[in-house]
Each structure stands twice: as structure tokens, then as C-alpha cells.
Length: 78
Length: 241
Image 1 (cartoon, rainbow over the protein chains, first blue to last red):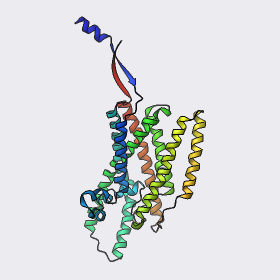
Image 2: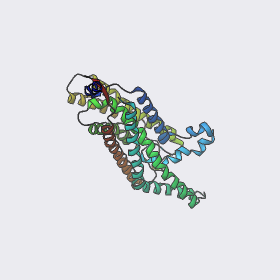
Image 3: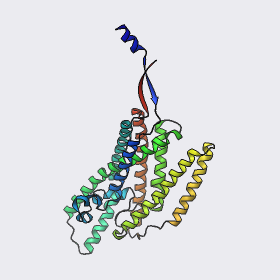
Image 4: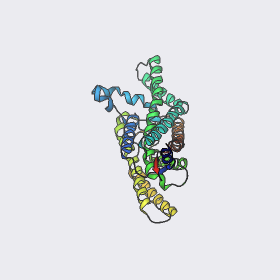
């Protein structure tokens, strides 16, 4: 017991700063960046066309749903 | 660096700032959008189309809800961009993490929002011609890429240069300005003619610029605050001494 306490007393918690770049996290953030910008700023039916087919280009659901923000954020719109 | 904490900082700060943007836009930008859409509806009625007022109201209500959701998504996207830039650029800027995040947020605001907005200002509905949407998107993306990649390249040069910080900053600022002036001249303008009332267009542009600027300030502050709280760059180790 005394030995255990002694061991604990000489273990110190230290904070270290790591300079390494989290590559997987950066990759995920690049995906979030491009996918989010595509949805809000550029989709003209492409996303829903994956399930809806050609009809998606007429309905423009994503475009219409993000319509107001698309204008307000300065993206080109119809 | 702790990847999970880093992701939480970026996504959470972006979500908060983006949701606030959507809510602010409901108050400040929507009146202009409603007025512009009112003109479009009147034009449709004048052209002999039938417009159901109840359906139109419900549709606009749905779009206004979409503005908040789209704000959250846009906030997450720009938060992700700030996170990437922060990881690589935080050591170049002295001071607290809030100051670093605010400075980098300001740089991104300038490079991918403000400079492109001067070339291609935001427009309310009634201004854009549906037939030119692809061309306008192409111009807009091109200009943002020119500005963004120029800034990225110059920031890499900044880190390699061996000179005083002030001199390095002045040099890359001058080079960036020269490149962007050339881009302003060479990249074609928006092809659409503006027929909407001038006060509507100008008022909309001012409000758009105002709310987007507030967004980038809120994003920078929120990012810095959450970074300080979670400290993704620090990891705890137990060491026997």
C-alpha cells in the first residue's frame, strides 16, 4: 500500500502541446466545407437527382429550401 | 492534437454562428427579400399567371424556415474552413486564441467574402436571370478561387520568407492587391441587367454585407472561446519522474 502511494505521488500530470496536424479531422472538415457550400450555394437539383432522377432539376428542392440564405450570403441565384 | 476536440470546436462554433446568422437575416434581410419576391409575383400576375396567396404564404414560410437551416449548414462549412486555417495559421499570430481566431476569421472574410462581394455584389430576387445562373456561378467560384488560392500561396511564401514580420506582411499585401486588381479587370462582370428599384438593391446589399460581417465576427469569437475551453492542442500525459 505504501509502495502504491509512493508510486502515485511521483506520477505527475503534465500538459503538453502537440504540433501534429490531425489529418483525418482535416479531411472530414474539407468534406463538410465543400458539401455544405454546395448545398447552400450551388445545388441546382444535382443532389436529389441521385434519387429523383431528372425531376429533381425541375423541382429544385434544395435550391428553393436554401433560397433565402443563398441570396443573403451573396451566392448567385435565379 | 486531439482530433475529436478539434472537430467539436469547429462544428459547434460554426453551428452557433450560422444559426445566429439565419435568425438575424430573418429580421434584417427578409423584408428586402419579401419586397423583391412581391415584385416577381406581381410580374407573374401581370403576365396572366394565377397565384394562390395562401399557397404563396405557406411557401415563403417554408423558405424562411429553410433560411435558418441553411444558415446552420453554411455556418458549419465556414466553421470548418476557419478550423483548417486556424490549425495551420495559429502560430503565425501572437496573442490569445480568441485574437488568433478573430484575425484569421477576418482574413477569410476579406478574401472569400468581401473582395468577391465587391466584384459580384449580392442581389435580391428579380435581379438574376435563370438562363445565366450556371455562367454566374462559374464566374463567382472562379473569383473566389483566384482570391483564396492567391491568399493561400502568399501565406505559404510568408512562412518561408526570412525578414521582419511587418516587411513580410507588407510584401504579401502588395502582391495580393496587384493580383486582385488584375483579376477585377480581367474577369467578366455579372451579365445580368439590374431592373429592380435601386433602393431595394442597395438596401439588400448593405444588409447582406452587414449580416455576413457579423457572422464572421461571431464565428471568430465563438471559435476562440470554445478552443480555450476544450484546448484541442493540449493533451494530458502521465509521466513518472
